[in-house]
Amino acid sequence: EAGVAQSPRYKIIEKRQSVAFWCNPISGHATLYWYQQILGQGPKLLIQFQNNGVVDDSQLPKDRFSAERLKGVDSTLKIQPAKLEDSAVYLCASSLDLVGAGIYGYTFGSGTRLTVV
Amino acid sequence: SQQGEEDPQALSIQEGENATMNCSYKTSINNLQWYRQNSGRGLVHLILIRSNEREKHSGRLRVTLDTSKKSSSLLITASRAADTASYFCATDEKAAGNKLTFGGGTRVLVKP
Image (cartoon, rainbow over all chains, first blue to last red):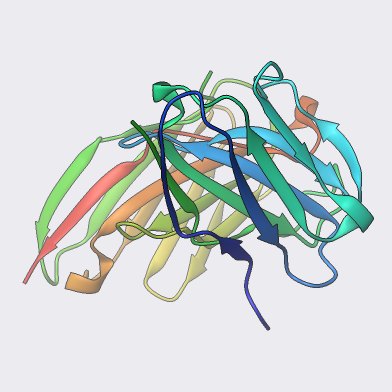
């Protein structure tokens, strides 16, 4: 089966600019996640979707980050305006599980490496 | 905040040796999962072990879970240079609705 697709692979922007990342999960996967991974650390959850609804966005900095999953398939994550500390890899993952099931693992995309200068 | 904490943070071994890394967590879990991440890549799911399981195997990987001690271990037997990667444990907390919280990872270097 096709994996989780993410684009772009790399992005360099100046601080205060805007940026958007795109994710196409595995077909049929109900849940979709965006994680932020700062160099040398483990991934940190930003937002969790089930179909096209937000399940958990408690760790999303909503003053500058936004995400949507229209039609319950593709998702976009936007940062506006970007700060230097947003430099990280942004990972998208999807799972066959519905919320609370805990049966399957996640499939991750290769991520978007963002550098804010 | 991180739920799982891996130990050691870094590990260097010779090809053919076994590698063991541990994960401790704080709250009750539905399951615990291990992932591998090669440099510059996304994470790859290795094993999921449920809270009512004590041990699980997959190829050269063996995972144990001790819920009384809130800890898990990942053993890689007969390591290969291709096993060089970062390994993360992730916990699916009972109170958190099927979202994974990752630890900081163990960086494993397997020398040929």
